[in-house]
Image 1: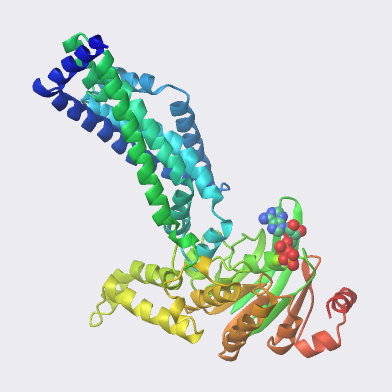
Image 2 (image 1 turned 180 degrees about the vertical axis):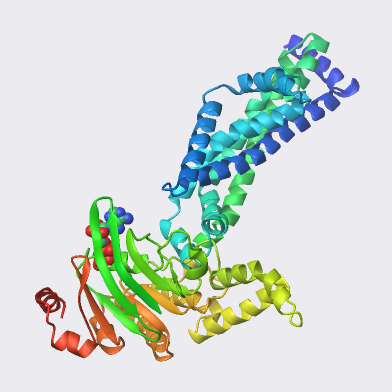
Length: 236
Length: 258
Ligand SMILES: Nc1ncnc2c1ncn2[C@@H]1O[C@H](COP(=O)(O)OP(=O)(O)OP(=O)(O)O)[C@@H](O)[C@H]1O
Ligand SMILES: [Mg+2]
């Protein structure tokens, strides 16, 4: 194992003395920003799409909107994230003359992508809320939108919180492809350290550990949140 | 107060209501009875367009609310509804359940209010305080003020239904529609709900009540309506209705339920 000890020494040297940790922190920051901003955009888009999809369908406008939303969802679920990143970064934005750096493009594409997935999650969440909740709200004169926002969606979110948590975890893991568009995420940081030391074994092990710790922390946070949201379910 | 003219409702190609005509006057307590599946709920739910009628009109506050162009939300604020399964908001406390709609509606109309009442300016906070007081007064009336901060899931069925009733009362409606308000309750809780409904009736509230409680229909209602085969087969004041039914199907029905 002497060989492995040497590798660890080499890694620590770069990580601590040659400021490798700064690169890693920077990467961690980008990874988290992309995943968090992506999730927030995704929840907004997803909720909007899910709401359109549960709208009563006998008027023309909801039907047209519904068609657009299905197309959107199929499009983003039907292609890999990397492809979407590449298309936006190298094709769409240059054509449209939009200048965005890799991290910004990644946040946006992650948002658009997770919006498609979250819309399906949110739709099943909304459908799991008893129809009587909507009727209760409408019966006192609240609009569809107000009832949705104040009554139905909060309950839907509570029901899908574990699934949303999984989506966030999936997003964190998927950020490892953003270096394709030049964003310096966690993977990129360890890759840099590896290249500098001509040694990838230890950097990649540490990287894996960091991902696992991130995921564990998030899982824990979700469980805490679920418990505090469960208030209205329990008898006092 | 409500003029129902030739009301029709189909689900797909099943016609449930085949032309209902009835005028509900201020202060009326109308009990609606009929066999299971005869369309009582459908009739009631058409009155506030919870189900959109497929034909006919419902005149309320001077407009035909069956017309898809009217702002139904505004009219529903004046027409309360109480459901068999309460439909309290599960994510809100009892107090929030009662305050939510009045606060929302008044806050939305705040600008207009402040323009029209230059010497009685209000803020959203004022409205909340006022509505909280009103909600607490309503809770006190039914003896549940200590439940103000409880969630619906912690209440008994009778408590839930009484809160659902004062939730609709909080909007100061002109009329309240009840769809079998006691059917989902344990027998020992039916009394407290009927008692509250009787109180409202005595105070002059206009009520339309779909019910299996013939006792309530006899004692409290001033009109009883029998819905059968998609139309109103018989309508009368309760004594005549129960002692002297004319329609043979109603005679059958009463023989079965009494
Ligand atoms: N949303 C719906 N879609 C299709 N059919 C419906 C719908 N709602 C009611 N119906 C049908 O309409 C008929 C009348 O139903 P409704 O609920 O009005 O009866 P009801 O008199 O209230 O019965 P009950 O005493 O059992 O409550 C029934 O045959 C029912 O199956
Ligand atoms: Mg019914």
